[in-house]
Amino acid sequence: MRPPFAFDRPMEITSVEGDSSTTHFVHTDVVNWVLLEQDGQLTLIDGGYPGQAAQVVESIRRIGRHPSDIAGALLTHAHVDHLGGLAKLQSRFGFAVYMDPVEVDHALRHHLQQADAFDLAPLAGQLRLWSWLAKTTPLGVLSRKGLSAAHPHDRVAGEGAALDLPGSPVPVASHGHTDGHSAYLVADGRALVSGDALISGHEISAIAGPQCTPSPFQHDEPTARRSVERFTELDADLLLAGHGPLYRDGVADAARRALSSTYSPNPRTWTVPRPSGVRRPPYRPGGSHPAAE
Image 1 (tube, rainbow, N blue to C red):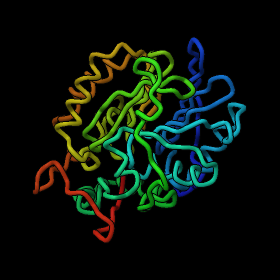
Image 2 (cartoon, one colour):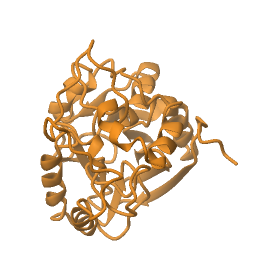
Image 3 (cartoon, rainbow, N blue to C red):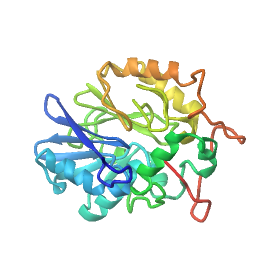
Image 4 (cartoon, one colour):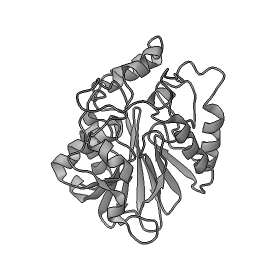
């Protein structure tokens, strides 16, 4: 039996062929990332926890490439489970990391919009929380480290709405989970890399299938919900979420399901309002220690 604290999480790669590029969705049981491959070069979207950097490298090798093939990386948002591996790989291989302009300061840790012990305390009686912590603590869930350099993705703007990176990803602003959260249309618009704006599963959630990220991890929940509402207008067939498996029944369908299930009759496992309001104050260096995503 695999111990829950193993650093090397189970990993599955699903490849989606586009007209001129291939999208590789890398799914693990704690978080996902995406590789866009075109003409021998790669765009890496997100990078898992700090302890998963080696696993990101392994995923690159499994598709027949090398980390030196990374032409640039994209970040959906600057939470530790998406930024942590990127920070390590950026230091080692020297590629640039791009994101929504609003998210740059967050990625550099000028502030931190991340769940803390207060947010998780009401879930202390839930076994799901402890199972999640057992898996993610060894991977670096408590890390505060940000990127050494971060750039707004308009620096690599290409023709039309696409970025001048392998796979020609198209940013889709999806603020709320963090102030500068961004999703990306890939595979010639066939798939949406949704980060944590819209997910297809989560360790602490009792809901199976498409859903909004559990409330303790949301920075601005009303804004996040409006972002998901806009996803109902997208024609993409595939949802490549930051958490949960590949969803094949359409992004619009996933968004509608998430909106209908977010406020379920029994939300105890994940809907936790803060007394001070939905929007949490940002952490700044020297402040209280963040405890989770």
